[in-house]
Length: 341
Image (tube, rainbow, N blue to C red):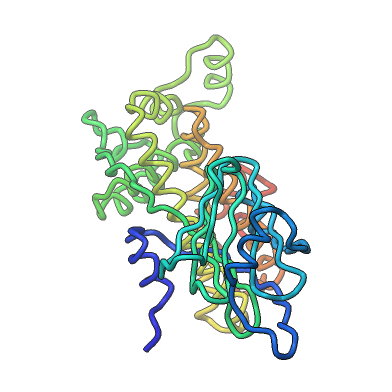
């Protein structure tokens, strides 16, 4: 069995590195009777610059700051010219199959037809390259990302998350907090920030007058005071959990796009998607309070495009009343997840 690309990475000391985007470029066929491989004469020609080359049209090479060329005579010689120093590492090192002059650290040569997979490295990135079935294949190589441990996020000691004069909100919060995870704490704080019914806390006129005088009521300011009290590690954890939730909901949206919207199962999955998207919005509001919502904003934009498309497929008459979605629509009339509430 031929070694896999992961095996070659391990052989190069890149255990744990991941393979990403792949690109395939047509490779010129050698002339009849021409031997494949870089001969010593061809290597000498390459070094002195007399070997005629033609450009390799590979976007991935450009992504790491390298211009690629191949020998016009289809001998398998590849010339790599970097904006900075460029290094070629072979999975099967052999004399005469790669070359870089100390006088020209930005230029490297490799006999791609015989070298086996080879790694191209610059300060901007790495590519794993090989010639397979008459094609030059290039694949991005990325270093493993060492993520900091998630910071604990606990309920506030004063208990305001579980107690509210808004009966519906209180029940919603207690039910959500049953999971006792960091994400549930973030979600409940966001629910208090977005979905509280002001009428349950006093007369609207008195509330507005107090706000105009700069006296925000505790039920309104509590979630924002709480998120401002978090340390940076906890804010980072909230953001990472939110981005992970976007990934989960994107998978659910993909499943709904492929399913029949006229079934009861579709409707319940749609309702769960809408509720969960509203949870995200509450967390996004809190992250924005700390100036830390940019990463989530980017990720959620794609989910929202899918959600807006799915909204048009949801059967209006069969969804029924939903207090959660009604409040979501009042908080943001343009939100696709509250449109059917």
